[in-house]
Image: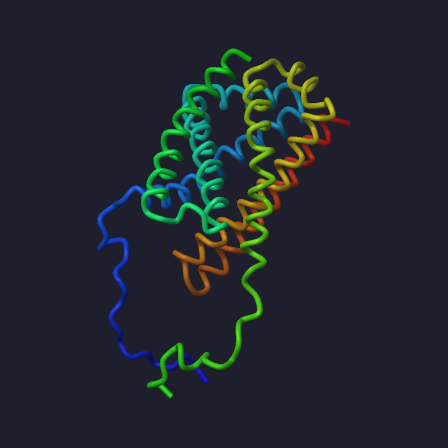
Length: 130
Length: 123
């Protein structure tokens, strides 16, 4: 019994129909940041592996990660991880059926956006000082 | 047969009996990462750009080594679950299976290399 042929039915409206909103954009960004974090994760694994291997390997990995390209990637990733952390926390709140009404959902959305900017700035300044 | 809708075909067959495991595993790992990630960020951020000897000395201490090891395990497990769902949404058929298997391999390989590295540094 193969897949039965399906009569064409109208599709429900999707992304191309709706006006972009804070709730939808902040949700899409959660997926983008979460998956893009693979890049710095692999870089950091390489950095640890290089540190464990030899001084020459470490010098090379350290050079790449602290070059200006590395700085841009790691600073962007710092924002991405804070964004992902806050957006994940928002999901943990939503899981309890709390904050799902529009007003609170909008507030949580802005909290995630501005919170991620704030945490990125503050943590970057602290780490420059460390 | 072809006039029967998807809903009609599954009606009365009961629930799929599965589906909550993925949600629960993402929830558990996300709560763990909520604790691990801020600590990891500052540990790694403090050491990035430091001389080799200082990096080795710091990460051979018990707490930094354990935090790194846990972040590798839980972080890549969480990534594996997340990327799985993304692939299911955008890739279909055989390519979907290949992508999921591929990303699962990448996740576990990165986790294993990270764990080997921190073990070698710490021990």
